[in-house]
Image (cartoon, rainbow, N blue to C red):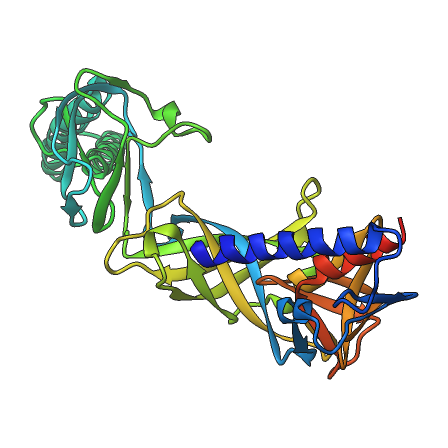
Length: 379
């Protein structure tokens, strides 16, 4: 910080001396003051002001970095949102946020009249089936002895088939919800997949209903794999040609410090957002140490092929109204102001479309001082 302050002070003193020298009637330009020749500034050979100017040759970039805004989300291919398929009241929570679960592990216990009804229907259907089976066996025996007619046997067979079908239907429904033969109304909400409970939106005593699974409602539990995250990216129209599935990127985030993680783009949308005029893309990134969190904002840097247009530091470009300028170092203390057309190239650099050639020496430090000299002598 001390060096920066010293440099600013030196620049201010030099500028003040130049202003006084240029504004005093009869001042001699031979005392180290620069001369102005149109758009060109000429410093005497022994001028100390030249030491404040730094020039850099213009180069063409071999590659560029495209920086995209992104947001981390759960990897939906390894994520499930759990809702209650039956209505009832939560009586006990089993799983807590951050807990690892296996497929089939209990998440919560719900006292559900709907579940009790399903259990009761299954039990009643089992009883009806047993009675129909006995009735059919008795009808077969009676028919063999000529005691009942054929139609009575057929009726017993039909009753048996209906009872068997109902038993299978109710048993499947009860098994779907994890019910056994007993009627206890205690529905156990279980994990459909293995993973980590990353979100819980349920409390003891809370009423739950099947219609809570509608879009926009929070899930009772969210199970995912935090070691793998999706990166949702927004691609400007001008950068669409650079983004496609399979392209790698480097992920930056304040929580990573100077470290960067590598990811890969897996999906690119086929349409633009009509409001933002950006295209959505999605990548994946490994999060083995779980430093990254879902819903974090991040930046993804993509290396893209660059054209051969000149690049200069942004500090070299001066904006006057709508016109951009740079100062060209011609050597021997001669600096000329030149119009250019430039645009942002990222990472503090400008891409110059017109006005410069590769090899030109551009003033990168001190351009504002040169501009002030021109303005002072041409008020």
